[in-house]
Image (cartoon, rainbow, N blue to C red; front, side):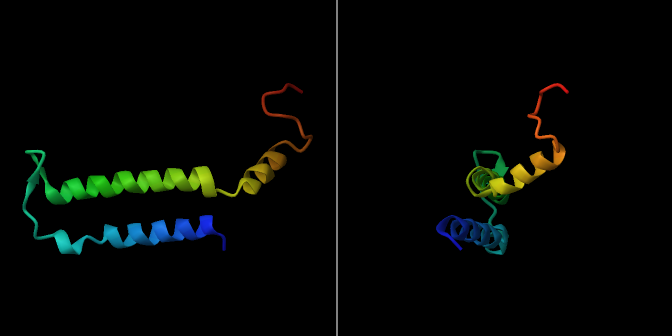
Length: 84
């Protein structure tokens, strides 16, 4: 396991723990003047999760899988968008 894969697993486990926000259920504060604190927290964790998924797709996705899929779709090794 290389450092990049390890960073993925650390981020995944961190989000898994942070998603279980049972320690905040009793908070009744209002943030931004209209939003309950727990809703703001869940919006924040959702945005962070989307950024982590973007990071994983951009930097950790195995590109060999894409090459296999392209080769299977084009058995004659024709490039995408080319005519017959």
